[in-house]
Length: 81
Image (tube, rainbow, N blue to C red; front, side):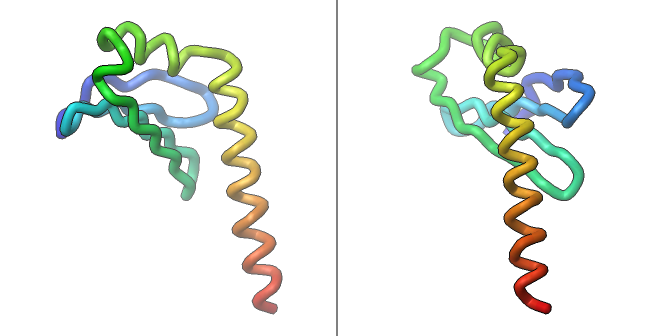
């Protein structure tokens, strides 16, 4: 696995890897992580992956998913007590 790129973002860390014929988009925020696997057959190269990472709708959905993940974990922890 090799790092293809790291993209700056104020809300989270984005790292793109190349591995086994796929691009892996690893997006981290605090203790949460989202990973997206994109077949190299579905994009023409790094430039298209960059467009995905910079797509404002995709970025907003990633933010919302992190909020949902946090809520789910907090709810589960609260049910324990």
